[in-house]
Structures are given as C-alpha cells and as structure tokens.
Amino acid sequence: MSPTRGVIGVIAKAPLAGEVKTRLCPPLTHAEAAGVAGALLDTLGNARATGHTVCCVHAGPASALLPHTDGAPLLAQRGRGLAQRLAAAQEDLHAAGHQRVLLLGADCPTVDAAYLDGVLERLDSVDVVLGAAADGGYTLIASKRVEPALFAVQMSTERVLDETRARAAAAGLTVACLPARHDLDEIDDFAAALAGGQLDHAPRTRAVVQRLAALTTP
Image 1 (spheres, rainbow, N blue to C red):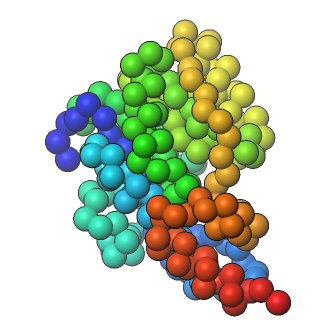
Image 2 (cartoon, helix red, strand yellow):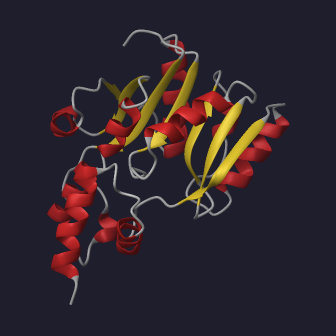
C-alpha cells in the first residue's frame, strides 16, 4: 500500500456466525447475520469509488474476509478494545506515510463516494472531521496526524461524540462535525435504510436486506 495524500480505512470484523451482528438475532439466525456482515463490506466499494487508497482494517481471520473485500489490502487491528484499535489504525496508516486518514465503520454503507471525498476535503480547513452517529457516537473520524487523545474516551456510550470533541478542543484541534447518520445495527435500521433508498449504492447489502425482509415480514 503506497503512501498517498488520503487513505480510507474501513473497520470490519470477519463475518463469522455467532461473532458479528448478533443484535440481529433473533429474528435472524447467526448464519444470516454473518451474511449481512459480509454484505456490509459494500462500504469498501463505496470507499474505492473515491479513487483514494482503501484498506480493510480487520479483526478476525483474513481468510474469512477475502471473499468480500474485492482485493482491498488488509491491515490487522491492534489493541484490546475499540478505542485502542481505532488509535492503532490511525497510527499505523499515518506511519505508512498517508497524509490524511479516514476511519469508517463497515456498518455504514449508506455513505457514498462523494460524501467520503467531502470528508477528506474538509481536512483542508480543520484538523479533525467527525461523522456523527444517531446514537451519540460517530460513524467516521478523519485526521491529518496521529492524535491519541481523540481515543481517550469510553466507547459505546451516548457521550462518545461529545467527549471526543472535548478531547480535541483540549488538544487545540479544530473539528468539523457532520450531520448524524445511523449505523446499521438493528433490524429497524436496515428496514429504514432500505425504505429510504440509502442502500442504492450498496448492492450486496440491499439484496440481502430485501431477501431477509421477505423472510421476516409476517
């Protein structure tokens, strides 16, 4: 992976039954939930459509991810929790020579290439860009240099975004915060994204959600 002006790291887990998207079970089986997780790697395709360098920053065996990554290079996650893993990914990608690093969760295939391009462009005028999530966290974080302080927060709470912004301010960093989007975690999230046309540029996700919607509708 050659150094570039911008790189997009898609944060993903290997789509193994019983280890991913367990909040969909029930009504889905663990095997069906793993199929959803694999389809969500449409996010990699959206990232690659920007023309920027893209890699899959993964947890779990690479062999389980390879059928879903369309040849994107893999970077193993490091660390014991989400905050450590995000900080390590930021550090690793900047250390590889990339000037701008955008980290994006695989469970947000509703963002298209133009949106991601815009995130990296915003780094012309600010130090950090955060894509707000509806649950109080964030769907993406972009930076121009290694900033460990951004990840010195308790993750998976409704205050993640606010605390991250506070950490950035304390470090003297300027921040742009983008309007909130939904991660796709619950059945209702997938149904809403499908109904709202938000999966039109995520064909594998759309197909699997349509199929599962037909199976789970009374």
